[in-house]
Amino acid sequence: MIFRKINIYLFTQICKYFFLILFIFLSIAWLLQITRLFTITNFIQSDIFDVLILSFYLIPNLIAIIIPFILIFSLLLCFTRLNKDNELISILSLGMALKPFKISLIFFSFFILILFSILNNYLAPKIYEEYKKREYDLRNTLNIENIAFSNFLSLNKNTTLDFKKIKNEYHNILINYKDSKDNLIYAKKGNIINKNNHYKFQLYDGFKISIDEKKQIEKLEFLNYILKVENNNIVLGKNIDKNTFTIFDDINKKNYLNITFKFLDVILILYILFFFYINNLRKINFKIKNNIFFSSICVIVLLMNQILKNSEIILFNYTIIISLIIIFSSIFLFIKNKYE
Image 1: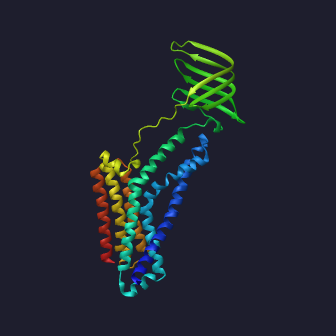
Image 2: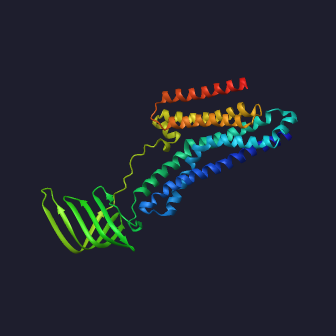
Image 3: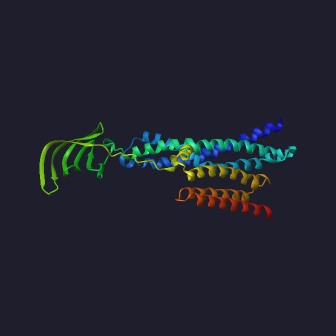
């Protein structure tokens, strides 16, 4: 009964610190990302609520990326606090040795691996794919009414717009567009309406200059002029971002490199837990130097893995390099423990 309560207590403590560090890391990462997204509004004046909603689509992907780093610091924080409060010594004095710690870590490992596998292999890529689509739409959808100033906006591949906006009125409107001719329109003022996938320009007091293929110039002065331009600026290209591929997509596409990325991400989670047990928990060594050693080695391994994943690397080279990194860090750990 006591053994069961100890296991529940240890598991609860590990989870508590894990979610505490998760909240801190995720908040920082989310704030950095939403700050980047808000820079979009500086130019196209997107709705703040739309940007805020878009940022929530990043959360699963952010969690999947930072979970290994969270694991490092949450384990250290949890067991350092337990050691400082002499709770580790109290549990050892019951004559159970390291068994309660092993059992708690095993249960926690299952919990983390299930959570991480669901996020990394399916949930995060699916939601990140939706994020990429929404971000693309947000970046490329121009809401003319919300733009405070213009600096030659490209409405589509054939049309460029410039204007000065004063108290919701458009002045000094300049439009350059191409059809069978090269056209330049200037109006002292006017209205711009975006409706039914078309821009409608109601222009007043201006002129239109057209130049044909033979370089002949035609000029038209007007008091009132209406121009309609198709709004086809948004063209969603083929998605080639590997972060949007679920494990099922990788299997269907026979993307063995991406499958290996996902598999080794899980291996690194287990590696961190094993490294922590051997380096810190087995000898109940939570001195500052030892904690720095554990966190430094693990962070270096994780950063190297991220660098390799984001580089143009082939499957064989990636597997060899990441395997050597894990082997050398393990040898380093063995030498350290032997001569301590």
